[in-house]
Image (cartoon, rainbow, N blue to C red; front, side, top):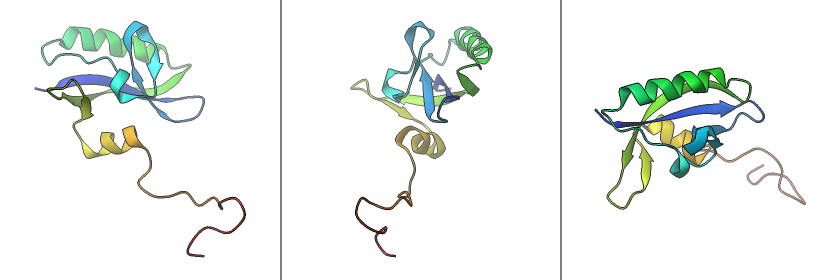
Amino acid sequence: MNNKMITANSVADGRSVYLASGGVWSRRLQEGLVFAADDASGLEQALAAAVRDEGSVCGPYAIEVVVEADGAIMAASLREKIRATGPTTGHSAAPVGGAPEGR
């Protein structure tokens, strides 16, 4: 069983957020509160509180994370790695002063 973290999307802008210490939401995975694999009750309590906080976030759920030897936190699944780092493609907005490249 892996360590867990709670994630959701911000109601204000839809971006991924992670439950951090003190019940606040952070946009940085590295600031997320890690629940040890054997702390199922702590995770369940925090998730229940996150669900009640759906005025500022929507769809909270637990994800698996890996804590590296140096303390770095990594999402375990590819989906969550993408959510943590942003889109995998460029945006279609035109750069200042011209059309998007390749058009």
